[in-house]
Length: 313
Image (cartoon, rainbow, N blue to C red):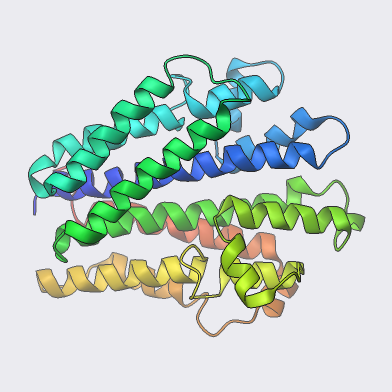
């Protein structure tokens, strides 16, 4: 496969996953604001920081406001990670690799872009925001279903999955990291009713509320939730699940191409940070430090995949 084709598939999947993750963060921002009695606009700082767009926002706006934060995340052309921006990039990459995609996948990506372009032509009010968020979820889910249901399990599929799980793991890692250093007003809130509400919101932000309830009922302990989002391989958005999938798809590529690339070794090392670990051990060593290490490794893995498979050739 040409490197440009591999890169187009990888980034198409990353951008689609980023659009869905940003939509979930927007929903989370609304829910977080409702848990505070005052200064609700301050909650958007954590949302912008989690999305990795706070610096760009502050370069354009002098202060944080709900309306500007929502517009920045949804449709601002100055934000390359806004939902509108990444949806267009996903569609552009899909068009670049059109011959590698099935008709079903191309139609889902292209149709999703046209629907979002129409919905985001003007600023979205708070009353209309839930509908737009649901539209993003529906459209990204349609693409995912088309990929799962119509794509051959070959190198094309592997590059799509690599993009998805790199982006997904990065998103969950950022949410967990920001949880400890932004969401709680003081260290004394840990274990309080406010802390429990915030952990519930974090579960919702990664679509993990239902699965968590099946396993743990109403117990909202920080250790249990951190374990679920980091180490539980039954949870399709956990860090452990995502890194295992990265390793599997890189190993499939190694078999297809007859050689093991350096990125496969990096993925194996990264997965080793989760396999056989206990959440109490991770918390004792420092969750922030652990997550920062994982995020750094994910960045290096993504860069190595691009080098190994010559994305720009």
